[in-house]
Image (cartoon, rainbow, N blue to C red; front, top):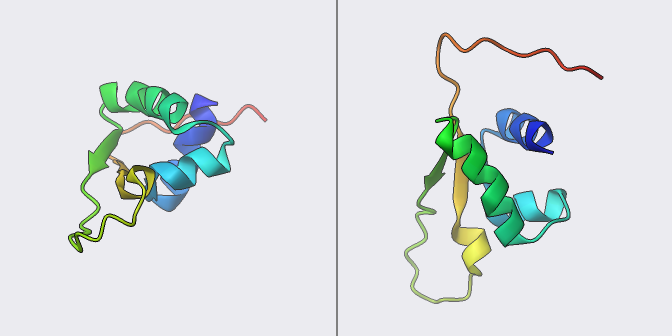
Length: 81
C-alpha cells in the first residue's frame, strides 16, 4: 500500500488526509502512520491548509494537507505490475 500511496501523491502532488483516507478506505490514523514512512524519507511534507476562516466547520482531516516532493536526482522505480 505504501507504493500505492506514493503513486497517488505523485500524480496529485498535494492531497488532504481526508482524500487519502477515503481513496484507500482506511482510517485517518492509519493513513498518518503510512504517510510518516514517506515523511521520514523526505518525500512527503505536511503543509498548512491556509484556511483561516475560523468557523470550525472543517474536519481536522480536511485541513491536514500532504505534498509529495520530487527532488532532482531521484531515481524512478519501475512498477512491477
